Length: 153
Image (spheres, one colour):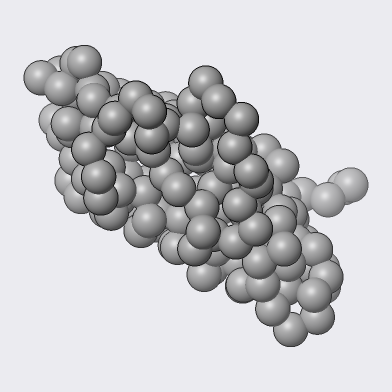
């Protein structure tokens, strides 16, 4: 973890796409509303990774909700981090939980929830949910808005 310094942010400058989640950098910025509890939502509707056994592509719609503390997650760094999974071999459960834990480690939110809505593989969709912390009283958390997979029927 490092404090935010303008010259180290990926925002506002060209940076190389990280080729793995371990090499990706998640940036944080100070929360100007740190004394107020509120919800931040990021949706990543075209997340991709690969099956660690077959190498076949896997696709998911990720929805990340968090109540920030001192830090906010900077969105360009999240985009780069998500893209770093494109050639990363991991099961759905591992990807979803790994992302949640990494973000918690970087920004230490008061509360975090991630929903991984994975598209069918072998005819079975897999939804993975990870949550940490306690939701502060009075914070409104809308439904994640991703309909259960119903196929064509």
